[in-house]
Structure formats: C-alpha cells, structure tokens
Picture 1 (cartoon, rainbow, N blue to C red):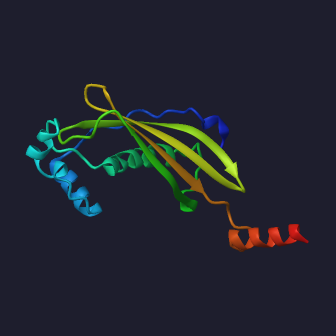
Picture 2 (picture 1 turned 90 degrees about the horizontal axis):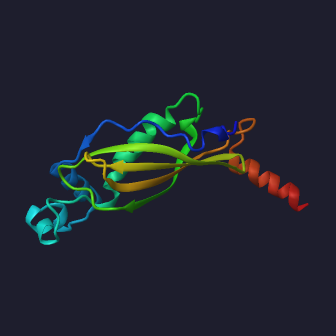
Picture 3 (picture 1 turned 135 degrees about the vertical axis):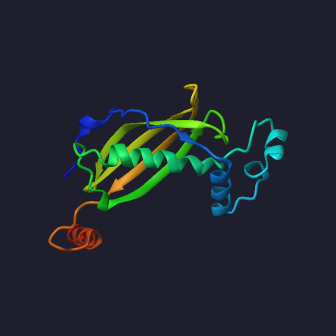
Length: 168
C-alpha cells in the first residue's frame, strides 16, 4: 500500500537535546578508521580555530536517524512497514562542524513520498540546531520501503517475469 502523500511537509517536534562528548567522537572516528587529530586532540582542533574536538561529518547520522526512527518511522498514521525498509541515500549540508560540548536537537520533516515500481521512497530532512538555536547541519535521508511480495514470489522474480512477458 502506497504511503499517504498528505504527509509530505509534516514536521515533527524537536528531539530532546543530545550532548556531544569527546569520547563519543573518538569512538566514532576510530570505528570509521579516521585518524584525523582534530577528532581526538583538543589542541589540534584549536590549531584549526575549533574550540574543542570536532566530529567526523557522518557522526550526525546517529542523531538524525534516531530522530527519524522515533518520530517518522514509528508514526502509526504514516503506516511505514519498517521490515521492508532499506537505506537509500544520505547527505549532509553543514553550517559548521559538530563539536564536543554541543547540545543538539533534531527536527525531522518529510520532504517527499514517491511510489516507484511499487516501492515507496521517503525523503526525510533532519534540521540540527545547537542549544542557542543556531543551525549546525541539515541531514537528508532517503528510505526505500520495498514492495510487498505477491503470492510468495520474490519481488525480483516477479519483475523478471513481467519483463519477459513484455518482451514477447
């Protein structure tokens, strides 16, 4: 069942503040294998005019996806079947880096809902602001809810069968 187009433009309330810690930044940088000293050493960060260590650009995904998950994905009125969802795309537009000590909130908005070949494609924008209300980053997330399987056949097999019929 296609998602309701009337949800396009719906915004959800800001999340509770998330305090960014040096240790979380360090753990994330280590996990992705990025040894840039501005992620680990406050003095290295200060040499680049940052007040403290900064987070790798993709660090904010943990906050924005959590916000989208709790608000958008779990919205019972939207009716998204998360068991069929795959992550389609992610991009970030920064005003400034995320820094240790930031207290960040995320406001999620559904930017678009499209139906393509029976799949629902949902684009969600997460606006991240600091404690002073200043914009830090906008995260754009695309989720694809795969079409339900018909009569137990995998979607790819159905598509291949349909394409074969159309070729004859």
